[in-house]
Image (tube, rainbow, N blue to C red):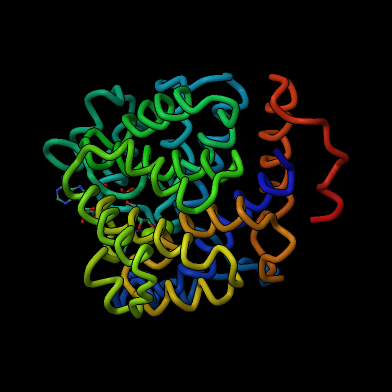
Amino acid sequence: MKAERFIGCVLGLATGDAMGAPYEGGLLERGIWRLIGKTRDGCLRWTDDTQMAIDLAESLLSDGHVAPDRLARRFAFSYRWSRGYGPGARKVLRRIRRGEPWEQAVHRGFPGGSYGNGAAMRAPIVALFFAHDLRQTIASARSSARVTHAHPLGIEGAVMIAVAAHSLLAGDSIEQMVDAVRGECSMPEMCVRVDRFSEWMRGNEQPGPQDVARHLGNGTSAPTSCPTALYVAARHMNKSFEEMMRFVMACRGDVDTIAAMAGALWGIGNGYERLPPVRLESREQLVSIATRLYDEQVRVGHAEPSKDLSSRS
Ligand code: F2R
Ligand code: MG
Ligand code: MG
């Protein structure tokens, strides 16, 4: 277990999000991001994907476990329209902020709850915090998803990404990672896509981005983005982050989120030093969060103390 991988995961998520954000959505969303996509000092701004990952990390670090009421309130009070939240998440979080219990509010975005990818995009954080325990990773991915995503597909997306991150942190090969994910899939919408890209991998097929988008999806729902992100990360694990980003951009659709999920997985596999040297909003805060998540692994005896890496970020 290496601190570099923790930093790689958090910075990979935020870098994928920030680099992908200008390419997400339609003309209106792209136009808005062109106006607000940089901070005053010229850093790339990240979106809801990274904000929710930060909130989840701070919540786990202060409570030691998923505390749903406090987690829901933290998500709700961090909500800003300018981070580009999904429409369902926006409704749910505004209601929680007004005092509605999350158990009720979570059904207000969509009847039956959201199956968006909003719970999956923050799930790598769960794997970092519970890197010592797969069962706790899975249970906590579920409970951290439920406060905003009541639909089983939204929850399964979070489990899928958390299991992939856990497996890579444990040093598994790409094939072992895909097997671990497939073992936790239960919804046909997910299973069929994981089976599809597993076939590609076994047959050494390299479909282009348009075919990947057509067969696996490029949408904002969990089933049309989580398997895509897993496949993209697996295919680019031994390539550069920049090449992976070009591929995700060419897939189009929910580019920031597919890149955030794939970026987190790529960062676990490769560490942070080969990430593109972009100026990223609140980089020091992100490195500090990753370092504190690693320190938690040291505390539970699952990792060796590491020298302070924040100065090298
Ligand atoms: N939403 C955005 N960006 C806006 C531009 C999107 C563009 N129009 C496009 O389609 O590409 N970004 C952020 O939202 C995603 C995370 O979403 P989250 O938090 O899961 O939100 P939400 O709204 O609950 O779900 C997302 C979409 O999934 C579909 N959906 C979910 N549950 C549904 C249900 N029960 N019935 C029908 N549809 C459901 C809806 O289309 C939701 O809008 C990330 O991309 C993040 O970057
Ligand atoms: Mg986003
Ligand atoms: Mg998105």
